[in-house]
Image (cartoon, rainbow, N blue to C red):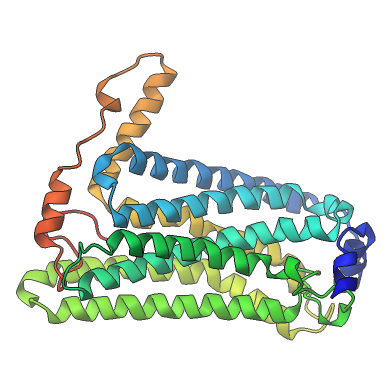
Length: 349
């Protein structure tokens, strides 16, 4: 292991691994550069829309509850994922061959960590929804403790997953074990990441299926409309998750199974990961825009930004709404263990 760490500052190692797994050092084509520009623009949109979510949750006291804190955590992880992907693109191409292994691990590990945090945030939201409808006391004393533990576990596990290669799980000095998509990563590590993400997807499916059947079997005459709303939300969440991540999972599985330089499609892996990053753009739409209250707060924030640009300050758009809102009142009234969807409210997460 000591010999591996001694190579972390060897600038020739990255070149050696890329020459072994790829078709040598080639200048990026004009089409690849154009796609990179498009992806950077998309990532800027991801950052802006998630900033809008965070601003809305922070400004409006009505959203200072466990569920919206989970949504804020998801937005924060998606924001960092967009920023990390921009940094990854700017440090790619010919610049890649100027990096030391430790710099390369930081570049890729940051992207892995933020994307993993986004996925784990989705799982945390599913766990919170499941616990909320299965516990008799939804607003018990351990609510805040559970929220902190879930959010903390989300980031700790994500950092561990993203940091495993720099800690030693890599293929330096073992070229035959190297990934083609990530030339300094071990194929076993790639398989591990795919397995973990697949388990997360399966877990989310299980949690939401359980929620669906609990709602369907409880007070059917009251919960029927909300069962349909829940089913629609779950279908959107799982559908977008699968559509965005399936191409990346597929290319990584091919990476694990293909011999070196035997699968040319692996050289196009950046496109597949760009599609996966779109999940970070869709999450705010899925988890927040289905709430009328959140949409109203979005408009307030956008109103403020627009007014600032015109140098016409408005006191009304900066007023923070009180926490004793209709949203919270109906939350206490209707969020029972048999019904995760609030009857008179509009938040369907």
